Length: 119
Image (cartoon, rainbow, N blue to C red; front, top):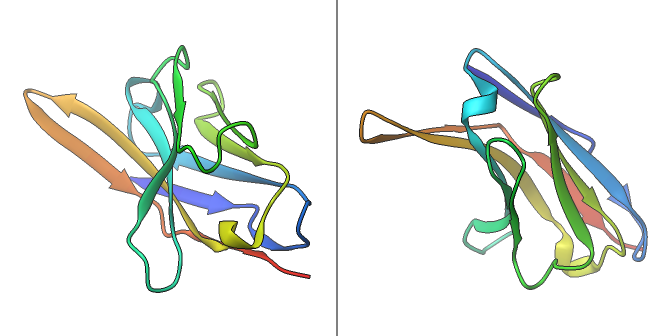
């Protein structure tokens, strides 16, 4: 099982980035996908989530209207489009896959990608 994030980097305030998370080794289309982020000295927090078939999304209030989560089940990939970035968006962004199998929660995490918003 692998979740590999990419697309992070350094961007100026007001700029945009698109993160990708490529999944392999499990039935991607059966898993809800989400993006979490963790800033230095802070707890990891849910940023955006999308259901297994992409019919529903949810966002943290701090990113609503600026970030968009989407998925392509044919490519086993989930995306996070981040616009109007702010310095407070600086964090390591993690991809998470989750589903319930036989009453138990299965969760996989990626290794994270650094996003730095700074002038």
